[in-house]
Image (cartoon, rainbow, N blue to C red; front, top):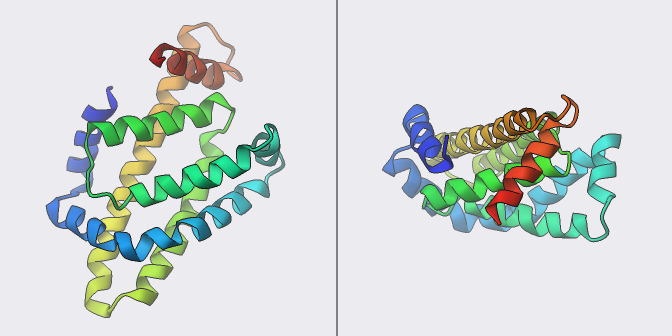
Length: 183
């Protein structure tokens, strides 16, 4: 399914409505400064795994680029514009992860770090009546993010199998082929 169409389904499934979008937009000045701190925690968590650490450090400068990319991704959670362009960009992130061998089993648990630190910041920074709406909106956009990421992984795997790649190579082969077609 095309990323924009999937995003429409996910918005309906999660119940993300204009009130949530406005809340996310209002949270941007509060949450965007957290991007670097959350990026550090995210990559620290991923770097604890031997296989993931090898991927992170395989290419000189990769980790430094990833910190900036992560910070941009995180700030994008609060952009307030969730359209086909947003969905395509997010799907591409999943394909790039897959193309370098980053498995969903690495990324999905690391999303928990993002959620934990963000929710803690929201609870500490907002007044009691504001917290519920902020948490609700944030959880909805994170559910959408996770689903878009999972879908891009599934598309890469399916495409890899159609190319005839072995099970242990289908994800990487499929992602690389899809990304190659996009250029």
